[in-house]
Image 1: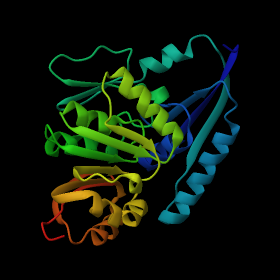
Image 2 (image 1 turned 90 degrees about the vertical axis):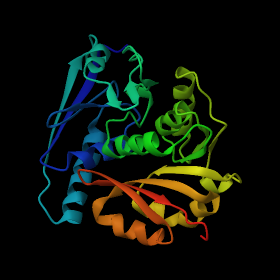
Image 3 (image 1 turned 180 degrees about the vertical axis):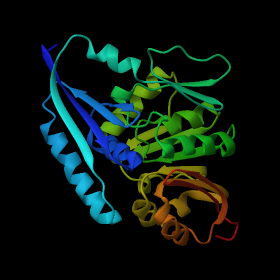
Length: 278
C-alpha cells in the first residue's frame, strides 16, 4: 500500500444521474455517492479523470442548452484506511425480492440476496436504470425461462434472473465487464449457461426474456438482432434510455406491444412483448 492516495470530490450543479452514469463508464474502480455528488479515491493520480469530468460537463451543457457547472476538488490524502472508509459509505439496496449488498455486509433473511462489490462491478443496483431493470426482472422473469442479458456489465441482472429460477446466457463486448460478471457469479454461487465476450449476434438460441440495459442508440441499432432471438410472446426489457430518446426506441420496436414503463428521474425502462405474427 502506498503512503498516500488521491481523492477527487465531484459536485455537479445538476443532473447527478448523468454524471453517475458517466463515472460508471470511465472508472475502473467504484466511487462513493454523497448527497450532492461523488467521491473518487485512487492510488493513481486523478488529474486526467478530473479533466474528463470537466469536458463531460461542457458537452452536457452544449447538448442540453442549459448551464451545468461542476465543482472539482482534488487532494492528496494520507493512506490510512480509506478502503474501510469507502466501504462504510456503500449501502445495500433492497428491490423486492432482491437484496443487493457488498460482500462485507450480511445477507438478508427471506430475500434473494445478490452480493456485488462496487470496486469490482459497474452495476450495483443504485443507478435508476439498474433498479428499474431489477423491478422488471422480478415481475416478468419466471422459473424455467430462458433469458439473455445483453451488455451484462457486472452481471447483476443476469444473476437476479438466475435467482428467479431462469436459465441465463449473458454477453458483453467489454472484457472487463465479462471478468466482473464471472467474479460476481462465483461469489453468488451461481453459474450462467453461457457467458461470452462479444455481441448478441453470436447467440443462436431463442429466449423467453431478453434484457438489454445499454443506451438508446445501441438499442435501436440491435433491434433486429433482439427480435430474431426472441420467441413469439417473449418479452424485451429495454433500459438505459433517457426520456428524450424514448420515442426513438419505441419506433424501432413498433411491432411490439408496449407492456409497461418504469420511469425514474430522467430514465425510462420499457417492457415490450413480441406479438405472435412478428
